[in-house]
Every structure is written in structure tokens, then in C-alpha cells.
Amino acid sequence: MENEKIYQMDFAKIYHLLVNKAERKGRTRQEVDQVIRWLTGYSQPELEGMLERQVPYGDFFRDAPEMNENRSLIKGVVCGVRVEDIEEPLMREIRYLDKLVDELARGKTMDKILRK
Image (cartoon, rainbow, N blue to C red; front, side, top):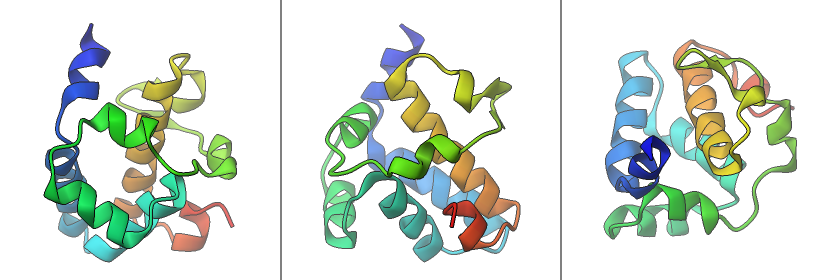
């Protein structure tokens, strides 16, 4: 039930929270966009279109053009839970993005964040 609340939240609202988190640590909106595009396969115009209309957060991930095949390399703890141990696939995708933005805010280089 708790997951369903997250899935129904407006993507634009969560996006702005992610950007604010990164910007507080000296990173940019463009870097957040790059991370999102890498993870989901959305183009920049598609991403901007999602921000202009109400899109549930769950649908943002369900409808992603091409989830990055290297996302399974994302490891670590988000909200006290190891992302690689999350069994529910949609929640794991959401937490992957949370982890990437955490890494961005902590000052990691983009090459490391994007698993190059």
C-alpha cells in the first residue's frame, strides 16, 4: 500500500525535489537530467514533456523507453535499504534513481555515477 502512494505521486513534484537536493550540494539541473536520461532512456524533450503534464511517478518508470542495462551495477543504501535487495521491480527502479541523485549530491564524478 505504501508503494502505491509513491507510484501515484506526480513525477514533476518528485523531479523538483531531486533537483533541489542536487543543487543544494552544488550540482546542476542538467546533471540530474543526464542521470535520469541515462537510467530511463528518455530524451531531453520527452523528459521536459513529462514535467509539463501530470504523470504518476510509477508510470514515468513503467513507460520508460529503455531502462539502462547497467542499472544493476547500482549498489548501496537508500532510505536504510540496500537497492540491490529490493524485490519489487518498480520500487527498485525508483530507488536506483534515488541512489544516483544521492551520488551526484555527494560529489561523485559523472563517469562513476553513470557506471562507465
